[in-house]
Amino acid sequence: MYPRTWAQDVLRCHLCETPGPPMYCDICHIHLCKACVGEHLSDESKEHKVVTFKKRGFAPECSNHSKKFCELYCEQCNIPICVQCVSSGEHIGHKQVEILKTLQSKKDVLQRDLDELEKLIYPKYQEIASNIPDQKADLHKNSKKLTTALDKHGEDLHREIDIAIKKLKSDVDEMESKHLVVLDKQENEIKHIISEIEHSIADLKKSLNSNDVSLVSTYKSRVAEFRILPPKLTVSLPRFIPQKINKKKIYQQIGSLSALSMKTEEHGYTLGSSGAESSPPDRPLIDVPRIITEINTEYGESNKLRSVSYLSDDEVWTSGQDNMLRLYNLHSKLVKSIQTKSGKIPEDIAVTQSGELVYTDPNDRTVNIVKNTQIQTVIRLQGWKPLYVCSTSSGDLLVFMITVAEKQAKVVRYSGSTEKQTIQYDDKGQPLYSSDTYPKFISGNKNLDICVADYIACAVVVVNQAGKLRFIYTGPPSTTKKPFNPAGITTDSQGRILTADFNNHRIHILDQDGQFLRYIDNCHLQDMFGLCVDTRDNLFVTEPTAGKVKKIQYYMSL
Image (cartoon, rainbow, N blue to C red; front, side):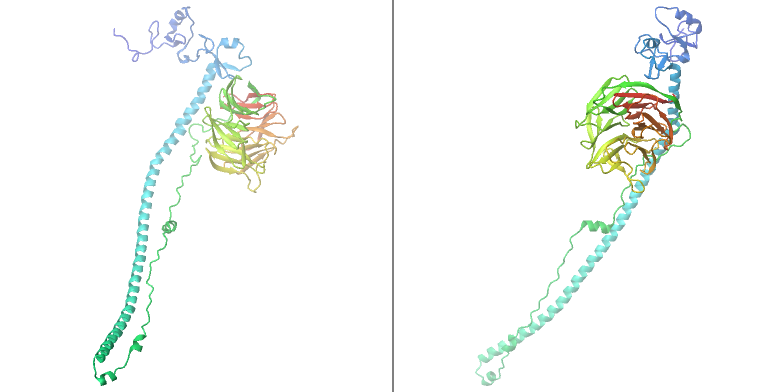
């Protein structure tokens, strides 16, 4: 019998070589038929985990307990766990689900992403790419057309210049002719007089040399006549007075090219609705929001915790009332701390789409970005102080700022260091925002709205992408114990707006049109300030005095 080649053979039982074995040992990594399962398990020299072939590899080995396999998943810690992890007490009070169920739900998310990429996004990019060669051809065709028009216009201009020069040369010839006529006439007259003078000189000499009395006595003097000289002819010779060549006027006379317009529309391309879902599926809010995790930080009464910004599933950036920016993981461990460039207190923080930390420094009027451990100033203001900041889905920064004198306030959109848009007044010319130093946290929504929580105005002010006022939310119709002073604000994947009601210790949840949906008021929240959400729409809330960040689930699990 010839040796088998594994690439060509069908799967066979490791013990009896029966083809198409339906079982698999996840620990020994061998295929088994049902008849051989008992024989395999009888080997007690090591542990075994026999599953159906389709379920092989579902249970990963526990990272904390060797040779133990994870059959459960902790939703709070977002990690697979084994039975020994559960018995250790580390996950008491955490929601635990079967790992197969978690795997399937995560695969459903992956499948939605795959469908959207294959059926919607990838074809759209291919369509966009296929249009670029046509744009290049149109560009070349237009350039040739412009060059031809310029050549023709140049010929016309040269022709007019030649005509003008020819006319001036003709004028020179005409003036020379006129001048010559006058000079010729004068020359003839002078020559005639000279001839007569010469004749008189000859007569005088003849008389002087003669003793003929009759000849001498007939002489008539003409000296008095010749003594009167002819009038002097003064002619101003023509000169060419060239105009100074003014290049600017030449260019104006020639004409100009219209400016090259290369407008980049952030949402100029749109995805169709066919195929995969273009937005996350509508998710219901859970009846009773719950705290998943509490992050204990070194902030507290003397250094109050203010802002929080999501970095990854396990880490969040924080800032308070000192000059440090601190990164914590969900287990309350300080991962990294960075001092601000100026050594002054940051007002707010945000994380960009690429995972870089941005912070505002009103003391030196800058917005700065942290790249690894290096801090770069991307925006430096004159006469304005940057207070609050957020990063949009397009990568722009939205910065809320006030004048140094606290007389005006506005939101400015930046692409890098370039100012792209200013939002300051409504359609009636009235200021949209109060201009004090009280909190004005800012967030961009998925529909491109810009939301500002104006603490002192007791309102959430929402404008659209163009900066036009959409609505102002001042709290639900029902009365509250204390005034509605919104502090932190954030938006989630459903376009819902969440804002911290500082005085009444609760979170307001609104839809993207400003309609009140519900409160989160059961999680023992105190003096809430900064808010942010993660990719699963879990909410992070800072409690300044307690120095805690609470992670809250308010949606049903996927």
